[in-house]
Length: 291
Image (cartoon, rainbow, N blue to C red; front, side):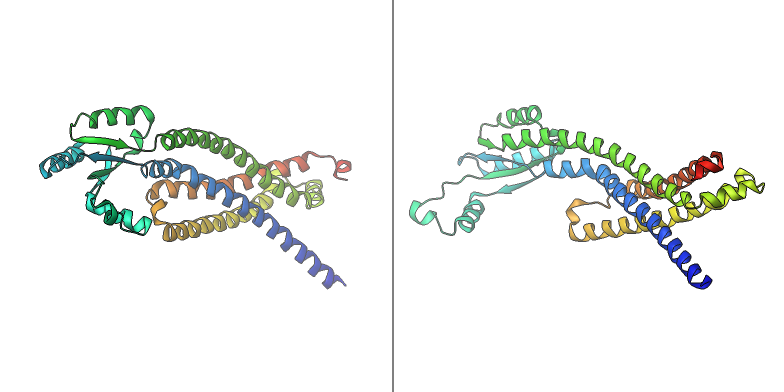
């Protein structure tokens, strides 16, 4: 009978430990994902901005010398991230692939123009800067037209500001939730041992002596949960980097390492501080209040 009761107590204890570790792991994992998203959010938004192309079309009178001169000009411009020259023959072939037929057979000519597809740096992707760049490029007499998606530029900048604000709010909220959940898990764990705490106090044990084993146990559980969260985050990072290399999630390894270390130490610190105050609460209760 005693043996079965001991087994039951052991299973209950293991189940309690597992619940605490799982809670810590899940909360830290979500907190880590948010942290990684925050440190990569600017680069991700910059990458998205830099995908917006500005196309500069040249008149048919523009010869190779003018085209080469414009090429050299773009290489010297600070606002240019990358560019590619698209001859009208290449543009015609691209249109044929899109529409599925040779439109020049019935037109008898190639109506397209030589052009440059220019990708600007993210800092210059806003309405004012692009208008200045457009005005500067139009000073070239051989430029016939400049085309880019003005609505997309405005939409991207407006939405990025809104998303950044919501990310900041979500970060604060999730951090608060993380503290409360880990604190609740630790308090429940200590609550199940409240009679042991009070018994030890009644036989003369000091508060620091009573707190020590509970804090040490909680720190170990927090350590396990934090390690699991860090390993899961590393696995997620490598998975995303292998499948979506364009995101460049591992480019800034220093910031990534700082987020992982922060997740690790937050798990241990919250476990320690929660256990300290939980044991202190039961140490200060009267025996009658335990019930």
